[in-house]
Length: 111
Length: 114
Image (cartoon, rainbow over the protein chains, first blue to last red):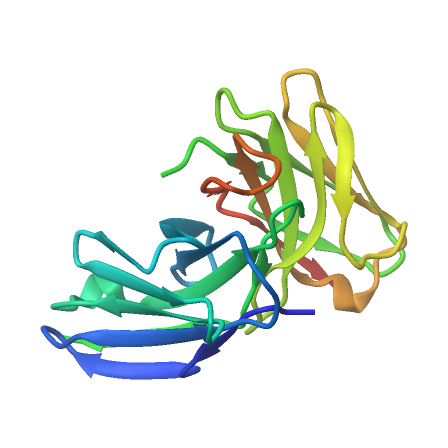
């Protein structure tokens, strides 16, 4: 079963615009991670936010976490065509040993 | 690119056959996890190996089995292949078996069962 659900399922924007993707989950977590996947290849880690953190930045990426609402958002600012990919959130439930992924958001950035 | 290498990159097998997929973990990582990703879906956890022992297992039947070697590389074996086993198989290595740090994924093996 999948813990996280990304929203929207697909997003199409123009280069230079900002892209926002959301993730909701069902149970308590220790951390939440965002990954990017290009064309059905391997996943690339983007950012990890722990349950006691509310916001984290990495370059053009901004991630927020609201544990009371069991949700997270990923903001990509000033998007580029190279940002075109699927984006997944994944949760870890502490003493657990696995990451539970959502179905992903397919982001298309048009030149 | 991560230091995680998977082989082969693509594979076509017939229903009922057996397959072995291989993964070399990133240097210094003692934990390897395997995921199955069906088309249009997120990765699903199969199992994790930590220091050569299975450390956790997802909702997959026993015909999915694995090994981890002393150098922390790993194999995923699938017996009696079914059409629904067609998927991208991803290996991830990490420093932390509790997944409190980032996981480094390989490029995957695309398995097609016909």
